[in-house]
Length: 288
Length: 222
Image (cartoon, rainbow over all chains, first blue to last red; front, top):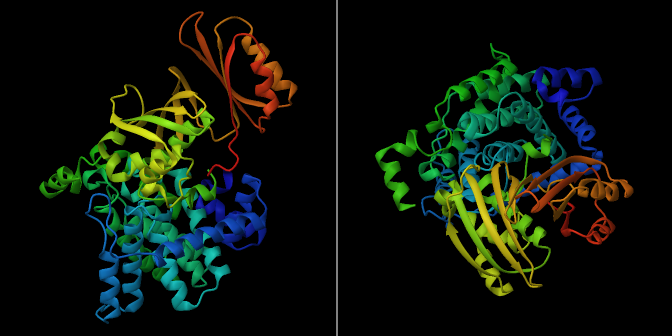
Protein backbone atom coordinates (compact mmCIF):
# COMPACT_ATOMS: atom_id res chain seq x y z
CA UNK A 1 0.00 0.00 0.00
CA UNK A 2 1.17 3.47 -0.97
CA UNK A 3 1.34 4.96 2.56
CA UNK A 4 3.61 2.16 3.72
CA UNK A 5 6.02 2.27 0.78
CA UNK A 6 8.43 4.53 2.69
CA UNK A 7 8.94 5.81 6.24
CA UNK A 8 9.29 9.27 4.71
CA UNK A 9 5.88 8.89 3.05
CA UNK A 10 4.36 7.58 6.28
CA UNK A 11 5.63 10.64 8.20
CA UNK A 12 4.30 12.94 5.49
CA UNK A 13 0.89 11.21 5.64
CA UNK A 14 0.82 11.81 9.41
CA UNK A 15 1.93 15.47 9.09
CA UNK A 16 -0.62 16.18 6.33
CA UNK A 17 -3.41 14.87 8.52
CA UNK A 18 -2.04 16.51 11.64
CA UNK A 19 -2.06 13.26 13.60
CA UNK A 20 0.66 11.41 15.53
CA UNK A 21 2.51 8.62 13.73
CA UNK A 22 0.75 5.81 15.60
CA UNK A 23 -2.66 7.15 14.56
CA UNK A 24 -1.55 7.54 10.95
CA UNK A 25 -0.49 3.87 10.90
CA UNK A 26 -3.77 2.76 12.46
CA UNK A 27 -5.95 4.84 10.13
CA UNK A 28 -4.10 3.83 6.96
CA UNK A 29 -4.45 0.17 7.93
CA UNK A 30 -8.13 0.54 8.88
CA UNK A 31 -8.87 1.97 5.44
CA UNK A 32 -7.00 -0.83 3.69
CA UNK A 33 -8.43 -3.67 5.80
CA UNK A 34 -11.97 -2.29 6.11
CA UNK A 35 -11.75 -2.24 9.91
CA UNK A 36 -13.25 0.14 12.47
CA UNK A 37 -11.14 1.97 15.08
CA UNK A 38 -12.52 -0.04 18.03
CA UNK A 39 -11.84 -3.30 16.13
CA UNK A 40 -8.28 -2.29 15.35
CA UNK A 41 -7.57 -1.07 18.90
CA UNK A 42 -9.06 -4.23 20.37
CA UNK A 43 -6.90 -6.40 18.12
CA UNK A 44 -3.73 -4.47 18.96
CA UNK A 45 -4.62 -4.62 22.65
CA UNK A 46 -4.79 -8.38 22.33
CA UNK A 47 -1.28 -8.47 20.84
CA UNK A 48 -0.02 -6.60 23.90
CA UNK A 49 -1.96 -8.89 26.25
CA UNK A 50 -0.46 -12.02 24.66
CA UNK A 51 3.05 -10.54 24.87
CA UNK A 52 2.51 -9.81 28.56
CA UNK A 53 1.07 -13.21 29.36
CA UNK A 54 3.87 -15.03 27.50
CA UNK A 55 6.48 -13.15 29.52
CA UNK A 56 4.60 -13.60 32.80
CA UNK A 57 4.13 -17.32 32.09
CA UNK A 58 7.82 -17.97 31.44
CA UNK A 59 9.06 -21.06 33.24
CA UNK A 60 12.82 -21.51 33.60
CA UNK A 61 12.27 -25.26 33.91
CA UNK A 62 10.90 -25.65 30.36
CA UNK A 63 13.14 -27.13 27.65
CA UNK A 64 12.72 -27.15 23.87
CA UNK A 65 12.18 -30.33 21.84
CA UNK A 66 15.93 -30.53 21.10
CA UNK A 67 16.77 -30.03 24.77
CA UNK A 68 19.18 -27.22 23.87
CA UNK A 69 17.00 -24.23 24.74
CA UNK A 70 15.57 -23.14 28.08
CA UNK A 71 16.51 -21.77 31.49
CA UNK A 72 18.62 -18.76 30.49
CA UNK A 73 15.85 -16.20 31.00
CA UNK A 74 15.56 -17.46 34.58
CA UNK A 75 19.33 -17.33 35.12
CA UNK A 76 19.49 -13.74 33.92
CA UNK A 77 16.50 -12.67 36.00
CA UNK A 78 18.10 -14.15 39.10
CA UNK A 79 21.37 -12.36 38.38
CA UNK A 80 19.53 -9.06 38.01
CA UNK A 81 17.58 -9.67 41.24
CA UNK A 82 20.84 -10.29 43.09
CA UNK A 83 21.96 -6.79 42.12
CA UNK A 84 24.83 -8.06 39.99
CA UNK A 85 23.98 -6.23 36.78
CA UNK A 86 26.47 -3.38 36.42
CA UNK A 87 24.50 -1.69 33.61
CA UNK A 88 21.56 -1.37 35.97
CA UNK A 89 18.35 -3.17 36.76
CA UNK A 90 16.36 -1.97 33.73
CA UNK A 91 19.06 -3.09 31.31
CA UNK A 92 19.23 -6.48 33.02
CA UNK A 93 15.47 -6.85 32.88
CA UNK A 94 15.48 -6.17 29.14
CA UNK A 95 18.12 -8.85 28.59
CA UNK A 96 16.20 -11.32 30.76
CA UNK A 97 12.91 -10.56 28.98
CA UNK A 98 14.45 -11.06 25.51
CA UNK A 99 15.90 -14.44 26.55
CA UNK A 100 12.64 -15.49 28.19
CA UNK A 101 10.52 -14.65 25.14
CA UNK A 102 12.93 -16.42 22.78
CA UNK A 103 12.81 -19.46 25.03
CA UNK A 104 9.01 -19.37 25.25
CA UNK A 105 8.93 -19.55 21.46
CA UNK A 106 11.42 -22.43 21.31
CA UNK A 107 9.39 -24.29 23.95
CA UNK A 108 6.16 -24.08 21.93
CA UNK A 109 4.42 -21.45 24.06
CA UNK A 110 1.97 -18.90 22.67
CA UNK A 111 3.75 -15.79 21.37
CA UNK A 112 3.18 -12.89 18.97
CA UNK A 113 5.29 -13.00 15.80
CA UNK A 114 6.90 -9.52 15.74
CA UNK A 115 7.64 -9.51 12.87
CA UNK A 116 8.55 -13.24 12.99
CA UNK A 117 8.37 -15.97 15.62
CA UNK A 118 12.16 -16.19 15.80
CA UNK A 119 12.41 -12.46 16.59
CA UNK A 120 9.34 -12.38 18.86
CA UNK A 121 11.35 -11.34 21.94
CA UNK A 122 12.79 -8.00 20.80
CA UNK A 123 9.72 -5.75 20.93
CA UNK A 124 8.21 -6.98 24.22
CA UNK A 125 11.65 -7.09 25.86
CA UNK A 126 12.03 -3.35 25.25
CA UNK A 127 8.45 -2.16 25.68
CA UNK A 128 7.32 -4.10 28.75
CA UNK A 129 10.23 -3.36 31.15
CA UNK A 130 10.58 0.26 29.94
CA UNK A 131 6.81 0.73 30.10
CA UNK A 132 6.85 -0.44 33.71
CA UNK A 133 9.85 1.75 34.56
CA UNK A 134 8.25 4.95 33.23
CA UNK A 135 4.71 4.05 34.27
CA UNK A 136 3.31 4.04 30.71
CA UNK A 137 -0.43 3.42 30.55
CA UNK A 138 -2.12 0.76 28.42
CA UNK A 139 -3.12 3.24 25.71
CA UNK A 140 0.45 4.51 25.29
CA UNK A 141 1.78 0.92 25.08
CA UNK A 142 -0.74 0.06 22.36
CA UNK A 143 0.19 3.25 20.48
CA UNK A 144 3.84 2.20 20.59
CA UNK A 145 2.86 -1.12 18.97
CA UNK A 146 1.25 0.75 16.05
CA UNK A 147 4.49 2.71 15.57
CA UNK A 148 6.42 -0.58 15.53
CA UNK A 149 3.99 -2.18 13.08
CA UNK A 150 4.17 0.82 10.73
CA UNK A 151 7.96 0.68 10.55
CA UNK A 152 7.81 -3.11 10.12
CA UNK A 153 5.34 -2.84 7.27
CA UNK A 154 7.59 -0.40 5.38
CA UNK A 155 10.52 -2.79 5.84
CA UNK A 156 8.41 -5.71 4.58
CA UNK A 157 7.37 -3.67 1.53
CA UNK A 158 10.79 -2.25 0.62
CA UNK A 159 12.96 -5.18 1.69
CA UNK A 160 11.95 -8.30 3.62
CA UNK A 161 11.20 -9.62 7.09
CA UNK A 162 12.23 -13.18 6.18
CA UNK A 163 15.51 -14.76 7.26
CA UNK A 164 15.28 -17.17 4.34
CA UNK A 165 15.27 -14.20 1.96
CA UNK A 166 17.57 -11.62 3.60
CA UNK A 167 19.20 -13.24 6.63
CA UNK A 168 18.78 -12.42 10.32
CA UNK A 169 19.13 -8.67 9.65
CA UNK A 170 15.61 -8.94 8.18
CA UNK A 171 14.24 -10.60 11.33
CA UNK A 172 16.17 -9.38 14.39
CA UNK A 173 17.29 -6.24 12.51
CA UNK A 174 13.73 -5.36 11.53
CA UNK A 175 12.42 -6.16 15.02
CA UNK A 176 15.11 -3.91 16.49
CA UNK A 177 14.22 -1.03 14.14
CA UNK A 178 10.53 -1.46 15.07
CA UNK A 179 11.33 -1.55 18.80
CA UNK A 180 13.60 1.52 18.61
CA UNK A 181 10.85 3.64 17.05
CA UNK A 182 8.28 2.27 19.50
CA UNK A 183 10.57 3.12 22.42
CA UNK A 184 10.88 6.73 21.23
CA UNK A 185 7.08 6.96 21.15
CA UNK A 186 6.85 5.49 24.64
CA UNK A 187 9.29 8.12 25.92
CA UNK A 188 7.50 11.01 24.23
CA UNK A 189 9.83 11.68 21.29
CA UNK A 190 8.90 13.15 17.91
CA UNK A 191 8.14 11.15 14.76
CA UNK A 192 11.41 12.35 13.20
CA UNK A 193 13.20 10.89 16.23
CA UNK A 194 11.30 7.63 15.70
CA UNK A 195 12.51 7.47 12.08
CA UNK A 196 16.08 8.18 13.16
CA UNK A 197 15.92 5.58 15.92
CA UNK A 198 14.81 2.88 13.49
CA UNK A 199 17.50 3.89 10.99
CA UNK A 200 20.24 3.69 13.63
CA UNK A 201 18.95 0.37 14.95
CA UNK A 202 18.72 -1.29 11.54
CA UNK A 203 22.06 -0.05 10.21
CA UNK A 204 23.84 -1.40 13.29
CA UNK A 205 22.62 -4.92 12.43
CA UNK A 206 23.15 -4.84 8.64
CA UNK A 207 24.75 -8.01 7.39
CA UNK A 208 23.57 -10.20 10.27
CA UNK A 209 23.30 -13.72 8.85
CA UNK A 210 20.71 -16.44 9.51
CA UNK A 211 22.63 -19.56 10.53
CA UNK A 212 20.46 -21.63 12.87
CA UNK A 213 22.14 -24.71 14.34
CA UNK A 214 20.32 -27.80 13.12
CA UNK A 215 17.89 -25.48 11.30
CA UNK A 216 16.06 -24.85 14.58
CA UNK A 217 14.87 -21.48 15.96
CA UNK A 218 17.09 -21.82 19.03
CA UNK A 219 20.84 -21.28 18.61
CA UNK A 220 21.75 -18.44 18.02
CA UNK A 221 18.21 -17.03 17.54
CA UNK A 222 17.30 -16.73 21.22
CA UNK A 223 20.39 -14.73 22.20
CA UNK A 224 20.08 -12.59 19.06
CA UNK A 225 16.79 -11.36 20.49
CA UNK A 226 18.97 -9.82 23.21
CA UNK A 227 21.18 -7.87 20.81
CA UNK A 228 18.04 -6.74 18.95
CA UNK A 229 16.55 -5.41 22.19
CA UNK A 230 19.63 -3.66 23.64
CA UNK A 231 20.45 -2.25 20.20
CA UNK A 232 16.94 -0.79 20.05
CA UNK A 233 17.49 0.73 23.48
CA UNK A 234 20.73 2.47 22.48
CA UNK A 235 19.33 3.62 19.13
CA UNK A 236 16.23 5.03 20.83
CA UNK A 237 18.28 6.84 23.47
CA UNK A 238 20.57 8.31 20.77
CA UNK A 239 17.58 9.59 18.83
CA UNK A 240 16.12 11.18 21.95
CA UNK A 241 19.49 12.84 22.56
CA UNK A 242 19.08 14.56 19.20
CA UNK A 243 21.49 12.32 17.30
CA UNK A 244 20.44 11.65 13.72
CA UNK A 245 21.30 8.93 11.22
CA UNK A 246 23.48 10.28 8.41
CA UNK A 247 21.74 7.82 6.07
CA UNK A 248 17.93 8.23 6.03
CA UNK A 249 15.91 5.25 7.19
CA UNK A 250 14.42 4.38 3.78
CA UNK A 251 17.90 4.18 2.28
CA UNK A 252 19.05 1.99 5.19
CA UNK A 253 16.14 -0.36 4.47
CA UNK A 254 17.08 -0.49 0.77
CA UNK A 255 20.67 -1.24 1.75
CA UNK A 256 19.41 -4.11 3.91
CA UNK A 257 17.59 -5.58 0.90
CA UNK A 258 20.73 -5.27 -1.21
CA UNK A 259 22.93 -6.86 1.45
CA UNK A 260 20.36 -9.64 1.87
CA UNK A 261 20.32 -10.41 -1.85
CA UNK A 262 24.12 -10.64 -1.78
CA UNK A 263 24.16 -13.20 1.05
CA UNK A 264 24.91 -16.76 -0.05
CA UNK A 265 22.13 -19.32 0.46
CA UNK A 266 24.19 -20.99 3.20
CA UNK A 267 23.59 -17.89 5.38
CA UNK A 268 19.86 -17.58 4.73
CA UNK A 269 18.12 -20.01 7.08
CA UNK A 270 19.37 -23.21 5.49
CA UNK A 271 21.36 -24.24 8.54
CA UNK A 272 24.37 -24.92 6.31
CA UNK A 273 26.73 -22.03 7.08
CA UNK A 274 28.00 -19.78 9.87
CA UNK A 275 27.46 -21.12 13.38
CA UNK A 276 25.47 -24.08 12.03
CA UNK A 277 28.55 -25.27 10.11
CA UNK A 278 31.02 -25.00 13.02
CA UNK A 279 32.31 -28.31 14.45
CA UNK A 280 30.12 -27.85 17.54
CA UNK A 281 27.14 -26.76 15.43
CA UNK A 282 27.53 -29.91 13.33
CA UNK A 283 27.75 -32.00 16.49
CA UNK A 284 24.47 -30.57 17.81
CA UNK A 285 22.84 -31.24 14.46
CA UNK A 286 23.37 -34.93 15.00
CA UNK A 287 22.10 -34.78 18.58
CA UNK A 288 18.93 -33.03 17.34
CA UNK B 1 0.15 -6.87 3.69
CA UNK B 2 -1.65 -5.54 6.77
CA UNK B 3 -0.08 -4.31 10.02
CA UNK B 4 -1.44 -7.41 11.76
CA UNK B 5 0.65 -9.53 9.41
CA UNK B 6 3.65 -7.67 10.87
CA UNK B 7 2.55 -7.78 14.51
CA UNK B 8 1.07 -11.23 14.52
CA UNK B 9 -0.09 -13.87 14.11
CA UNK B 10 -0.57 -14.90 17.69
CA UNK B 11 0.80 -18.43 17.51
CA UNK B 12 2.41 -21.28 19.37
CA UNK B 13 6.15 -21.36 18.60
CA UNK B 14 8.74 -21.95 17.42
CA UNK B 15 8.32 -21.29 13.68
CA UNK B 16 5.67 -19.54 11.59
CA UNK B 17 6.36 -21.84 8.62
CA UNK B 18 7.12 -25.14 10.40
CA UNK B 19 4.61 -24.80 13.26
CA UNK B 20 1.82 -22.27 12.51
CA UNK B 21 1.75 -23.17 8.79
CA UNK B 22 1.79 -26.87 9.65
CA UNK B 23 -1.28 -26.42 11.88
CA UNK B 24 -3.00 -24.72 8.95
CA UNK B 25 -2.12 -27.65 6.63
CA UNK B 26 -3.84 -29.99 9.10
CA UNK B 27 -6.81 -27.62 9.36
CA UNK B 28 -7.33 -27.28 5.63
CA UNK B 29 -7.20 -31.08 5.28
CA UNK B 30 -9.95 -31.33 7.91
CA UNK B 31 -11.99 -28.62 6.15
CA UNK B 32 -11.60 -30.38 2.80
CA UNK B 33 -12.61 -33.69 4.37
CA UNK B 34 -15.70 -32.03 5.82
CA UNK B 35 -16.07 -34.41 8.77
CA UNK B 36 -14.26 -35.57 11.90
CA UNK B 37 -11.09 -37.43 10.79
CA UNK B 38 -10.66 -40.90 12.30
CA UNK B 39 -7.51 -41.95 10.47
CA UNK B 40 -4.64 -40.10 8.78
CA UNK B 41 -1.38 -40.76 6.97
CA UNK B 42 1.05 -37.86 7.14
CA UNK B 43 4.20 -37.67 5.02
CA UNK B 44 6.69 -34.83 5.50
CA UNK B 45 8.92 -33.65 2.68
CA UNK B 46 12.10 -31.53 2.44
CA UNK B 47 12.81 -29.21 5.35
CA UNK B 48 9.64 -30.46 7.08
CA UNK B 49 11.16 -33.95 7.13
CA UNK B 50 14.66 -32.74 8.11
CA UNK B 51 13.87 -30.24 10.88
CA UNK B 52 10.17 -30.87 11.50
CA UNK B 53 10.66 -32.85 14.69
CA UNK B 54 12.51 -29.98 16.41
CA UNK B 55 9.89 -27.49 15.23
CA UNK B 56 6.93 -29.58 16.38
CA UNK B 57 5.73 -30.00 12.77
CA UNK B 58 4.21 -33.51 13.24
CA UNK B 59 2.33 -32.40 16.37
CA UNK B 60 1.23 -29.22 14.59
CA UNK B 61 -0.29 -31.09 11.63
CA UNK B 62 -2.13 -33.50 13.94
CA UNK B 63 -3.39 -30.51 15.97
CA UNK B 64 -4.76 -28.97 12.78
CA UNK B 65 -6.47 -32.24 11.82
CA UNK B 66 -8.19 -32.11 15.21
CA UNK B 67 -9.43 -28.61 14.40
CA UNK B 68 -7.03 -26.67 16.64
CA UNK B 69 -5.91 -23.20 15.53
CA UNK B 70 -2.26 -22.01 15.35
CA UNK B 71 -2.52 -20.21 18.73
CA UNK B 72 -3.97 -23.19 20.64
CA UNK B 73 -1.77 -24.07 23.60
CA UNK B 74 -2.73 -27.74 23.31
CA UNK B 75 -0.65 -28.09 20.11
CA UNK B 76 2.36 -29.64 21.96
CA UNK B 77 0.02 -32.32 23.42
CA UNK B 78 -1.87 -33.02 20.20
CA UNK B 79 -0.79 -36.69 20.01
CA UNK B 80 -2.48 -37.36 23.34
CA UNK B 81 -5.53 -35.41 22.23
CA UNK B 82 -5.69 -37.50 19.03
CA UNK B 83 -5.77 -40.66 21.11
CA UNK B 84 -8.61 -39.29 23.27
CA UNK B 85 -10.60 -38.27 20.20
CA UNK B 86 -10.05 -41.54 18.35
CA UNK B 87 -7.81 -40.23 15.54
CA UNK B 88 -5.28 -42.84 14.45
CA UNK B 89 -2.35 -41.59 12.44
CA UNK B 90 0.90 -42.70 10.82
CA UNK B 91 3.84 -40.37 10.25
CA UNK B 92 6.53 -40.81 7.61
CA UNK B 93 8.90 -39.03 5.25
CA UNK B 94 8.59 -38.68 1.50
CA UNK B 95 10.58 -36.92 -1.20
CA UNK B 96 8.16 -34.75 -3.18
CA UNK B 97 9.62 -33.34 -6.39
CA UNK B 98 9.14 -29.78 -7.68
CA UNK B 99 7.45 -28.46 -4.56
CA UNK B 100 8.46 -25.93 -1.88
CA UNK B 101 10.92 -27.40 0.70
CA UNK B 102 8.30 -27.03 3.46
CA UNK B 103 5.69 -29.49 2.24
CA UNK B 104 3.52 -32.37 3.41
CA UNK B 105 1.19 -34.94 1.92
CA UNK B 106 -1.75 -35.76 4.18
CA UNK B 107 -4.43 -38.40 3.58
CA UNK B 108 -7.36 -38.34 5.97
CA UNK B 109 -10.38 -40.61 6.39
CA UNK B 110 -13.57 -39.31 7.97
CA UNK B 111 -16.06 -40.88 10.37
CA UNK B 112 -18.59 -40.76 7.51
CA UNK B 113 -16.38 -42.88 5.22
CA UNK B 114 -15.05 -39.92 3.20
CA UNK B 115 -11.41 -39.65 2.21
CA UNK B 116 -9.24 -36.76 1.08
CA UNK B 117 -5.61 -36.52 -0.03
CA UNK B 118 -3.97 -33.12 0.29
CA UNK B 119 -0.51 -31.93 -0.75
CA UNK B 120 0.31 -28.53 0.77
CA UNK B 121 3.28 -26.20 1.33
CA UNK B 122 4.07 -23.62 3.98
CA UNK B 123 6.38 -21.08 2.37
CA UNK B 124 6.60 -18.67 5.32
CA UNK B 125 4.79 -16.38 7.72
CA UNK B 126 2.19 -19.08 8.46
CA UNK B 127 0.62 -18.82 5.00
CA UNK B 128 -0.08 -22.09 3.17
CA UNK B 129 -0.86 -23.28 -0.35
CA UNK B 130 -2.51 -26.55 -1.42
CA UNK B 131 -0.71 -27.87 -4.52
CA UNK B 132 -2.44 -31.22 -4.91
CA UNK B 133 -5.94 -32.45 -4.09
CA UNK B 134 -6.98 -36.09 -4.53
CA UNK B 135 -4.19 -36.67 -7.04
CA UNK B 136 -4.93 -33.58 -9.16
CA UNK B 137 -2.50 -30.64 -9.35
CA UNK B 138 -4.00 -27.38 -8.13
CA UNK B 139 -3.19 -24.16 -6.27
CA UNK B 140 -5.22 -22.42 -3.56
CA UNK B 141 -4.75 -21.15 -0.03
CA UNK B 142 -8.22 -21.38 1.50
CA UNK B 143 -7.81 -17.89 2.97
CA UNK B 144 -10.60 -16.50 0.76
CA UNK B 145 -14.00 -18.11 -0.03
CA UNK B 146 -13.15 -21.01 -2.36
CA UNK B 147 -15.35 -23.40 -4.32
CA UNK B 148 -13.84 -26.71 -5.46
CA UNK B 149 -15.61 -28.70 -8.15
CA UNK B 150 -14.46 -32.09 -9.40
CA UNK B 151 -16.13 -33.10 -12.64
CA UNK B 152 -15.93 -35.20 -15.77
CA UNK B 153 -13.57 -33.69 -18.37
CA UNK B 154 -16.22 -32.88 -20.98
CA UNK B 155 -17.33 -29.64 -22.68
CA UNK B 156 -19.64 -27.19 -20.92
CA UNK B 157 -18.84 -27.59 -17.23
CA UNK B 158 -17.13 -24.22 -16.76
CA UNK B 159 -20.14 -22.38 -18.13
CA UNK B 160 -22.66 -24.46 -16.12
CA UNK B 161 -20.73 -23.97 -12.88
CA UNK B 162 -20.09 -20.26 -13.46
CA UNK B 163 -23.79 -19.76 -14.25
CA UNK B 164 -24.73 -21.07 -10.78
CA UNK B 165 -22.03 -18.93 -9.15
CA UNK B 166 -23.28 -15.85 -11.02
CA UNK B 167 -26.92 -16.56 -10.12
CA UNK B 168 -25.97 -16.34 -6.44
CA UNK B 169 -24.33 -12.94 -7.07
CA UNK B 170 -20.80 -14.09 -6.31
CA UNK B 171 -17.88 -12.31 -7.94
CA UNK B 172 -15.11 -14.66 -9.10
CA UNK B 173 -11.61 -13.34 -8.29
CA UNK B 174 -9.65 -16.28 -9.74
CA UNK B 175 -10.59 -19.42 -11.63
CA UNK B 176 -8.22 -22.27 -12.28
CA UNK B 177 -8.75 -25.68 -13.83
CA UNK B 178 -6.53 -28.74 -14.10
CA UNK B 179 -7.28 -32.25 -15.35
CA UNK B 180 -5.56 -35.60 -14.98
CA UNK B 181 -6.10 -36.72 -18.59
CA UNK B 182 -8.30 -35.93 -21.59
CA UNK B 183 -11.77 -37.26 -20.86
CA UNK B 184 -10.75 -38.04 -17.27
CA UNK B 185 -11.28 -35.92 -14.15
CA UNK B 186 -11.02 -32.19 -13.88
CA UNK B 187 -10.71 -29.92 -10.82
CA UNK B 188 -12.05 -26.36 -10.88
CA UNK B 189 -10.90 -23.96 -8.16
CA UNK B 190 -13.04 -20.84 -7.96
CA UNK B 191 -12.05 -18.11 -5.53
CA UNK B 192 -14.78 -15.58 -4.75
CA UNK B 193 -15.05 -12.20 -3.04
CA UNK B 194 -18.15 -13.21 -1.07
CA UNK B 195 -19.19 -16.00 1.29
CA UNK B 196 -20.25 -19.07 -0.73
CA UNK B 197 -23.71 -20.19 0.47
CA UNK B 198 -24.81 -23.79 0.87
CA UNK B 199 -27.22 -23.45 -2.07
CA UNK B 200 -24.34 -23.22 -4.55
CA UNK B 201 -22.94 -26.64 -3.69
CA UNK B 202 -26.43 -28.19 -3.39
CA UNK B 203 -27.30 -27.03 -6.91
CA UNK B 204 -23.99 -28.06 -8.41
CA UNK B 205 -24.34 -31.57 -6.98
CA UNK B 206 -27.52 -31.99 -9.06
CA UNK B 207 -25.53 -31.66 -12.28
CA UNK B 208 -24.69 -34.96 -13.96
CA UNK B 209 -20.94 -35.54 -14.20
CA UNK B 210 -20.03 -33.44 -11.15
CA UNK B 211 -18.54 -35.85 -8.62
CA UNK B 212 -17.60 -33.65 -5.73
CA UNK B 213 -18.25 -30.11 -4.56
CA UNK B 214 -16.50 -28.53 -1.58
CA UNK B 215 -17.01 -25.05 -0.14
CA UNK B 216 -14.26 -23.42 1.91
CA UNK B 217 -15.37 -20.27 3.70
CA UNK B 218 -12.59 -18.79 5.83
CA UNK B 219 -14.79 -17.45 8.68
CA UNK B 220 -13.16 -18.03 12.01
CA UNK B 221 -9.83 -19.00 10.49
CA UNK B 222 -6.81 -17.30 12.02
